[in-house]
Image (cartoon, rainbow, N blue to C red):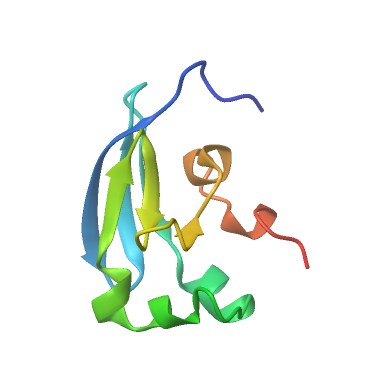
Length: 91
């Protein structure tokens, strides 16, 4: 499956726990649950985002979702669009 050309995230909304609603430039909206990824793929750089106070401090920059000043945690837009974070990092 392919994503639309020049796809970006245009809006985001924290929903609950580790779920964020993402709205894309083609009109698609997905509620993406990041919990599975955060707990199945431990890593010192982004383990801190298991704390909801830190997790909620995300931002949208240049059409992508980021955590941290230096993009400590970010995901390929394709995986967010298809709501499949497990394909991001196959360890």
